[in-house]
Structure formats: structure tokens, C-alpha cells
Length: 297
Image (cartoon, rainbow, N blue to C red; front, side, top):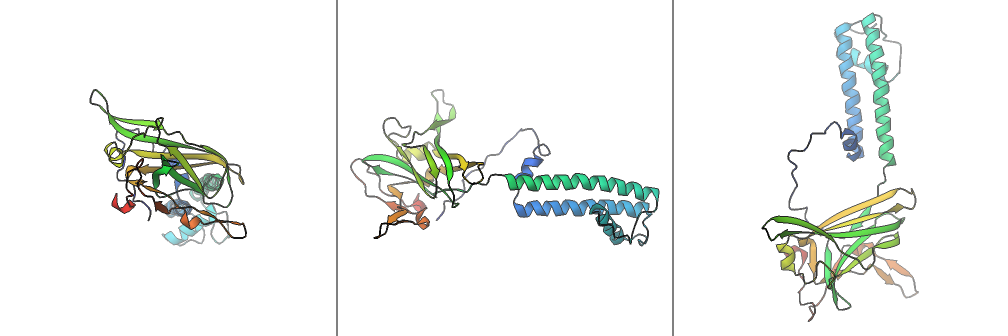
């Protein structure tokens, strides 16, 4: 069962309004369905505006007087450079509107083409993160484990990963402060990231989480930020992935289920159905924390 969405939102107050300045990036962030919807809406709106202009000025041969439909269809023919010939401008005002619409259509077509090309060119990495991070003994040492993977059939070449911890502390002056620190991993780089890779961070004396408990993580409102960077080995474009775990998404006394197994004939089976599955471990003298199911945290 996937974790719930983040329990809080960040509200930015006093920032400079840059809606139009970020319009291009906002358009790139839209889904394909919404992008096509915006393009169609702009096309229809532009034709409706020019149709009103044609109605106001007249001068369109074979168009019914005061007919918005005829003016709209003439505008569509003009913007689409169709030119059936059934309706055509025959006054100076109508000719000037046709020139303005032709120029506008060039700009709108260029913008729509550029936007679609940019969206096709965007690197769309599908980096997967397990629903929960886990902490359990590994060779007798409490170890934070995070599973990442590539949901595509290809590989992410020269993938590097970084794990940061964000915690809330109170300074000696009584000031509430958010502090970030990097968690060193046993291995932070792989030549090819495929379906599954488990990141390991020992909670030893060098770890910022040394001596941590479920209660201390909750008290400090600990969050883990996982960042993956690599190169798609098909498109040769950079791939980025980022995920955040709140302290309630860190399961103590558990580890990730094995996704690799060997058949009797020596072949390897990769079962991606177990990617998010976790197995609970037994408490030990060095790791007395009992397993806590995610829905009970």
C-alpha cells in the first residue's frame, strides 16, 4: 500500500509574481492532454475574436450579415490557410483583418510547434522509489535501506545517488532551525541502474542518524530526500529523479523483500512485483526495535 501524500504544504508569501515569465515552463509541465486542450482552446478563442471583427466590419463575400457562424468559419479558413473560395474579403477593413490574422496565425503556429517539439525533446526518466525506507540490522549494524529502480526496460548509465536528511533542531539561542546533512552510502554510484538497486547507509558512529530511534526521528521531524542523476542509454539525455520520505515512511525492524531469485537451471528471475514489499525482522540485542507496520506508524 503506497504511503499517504505529504502531511503539509509550503505556502510562499511575498514572492515576485512571475506568472507570465514562467508561462513557458508552466506549459512544459502540463500533461499532453492538457497541452493539446490549451492549443485547441487558444485556436478557437483566436478565431472567435477575429470572427467578431469580421462581423463588425463586414466586407466578406457570400457571408450572411450578422452571422457569427459564417464569420467564424471564414476565420478558421483564413487561419488554417484553407481558402475554399466560397467566402473572401472584398473591403479594405476585411483585407486588413485578414492580414492581421495571417500574421497572428504564423506566431500561434510557431509557438504551438515549438511547445510540442520541446515536450517531445524533454527527458522523461521513470525512476521508481519504494513506498517505504527501512531500517534493520545488516551484518550486525543498523542500516538504512532505500530501494530505487528504473521502470523502463533500458538502463540509466553512470547513475549517481545522494541521500540527504532534513531535521528540525533548536539552537542554543532557542531558534528553530532546519538542518540538512548528507548521509554517506556504502555505494553511491552504479554503471547501470536497471530495475532495482538498494541503497545502504550504516547507522554507525559516522552517521548523522547514529543512535536514532523512531521517537527521535518523530521529535526532530526527520525527512529523507533521495536524488538520482544519470544518462538515458537510449536517448543519451540526462535523467533526474527525486523522492521524499517523512519519518512516518521509514519502517523500523524491516527490510526490502528480495526481487532476485535463481531457478534450478541456474537462470535469474527478477520479480518487480516485490519492489515495494517489505519483510519484518526480529529484534536483537543490538537492534531492540520491534517491527512497526506502516499503517500503524
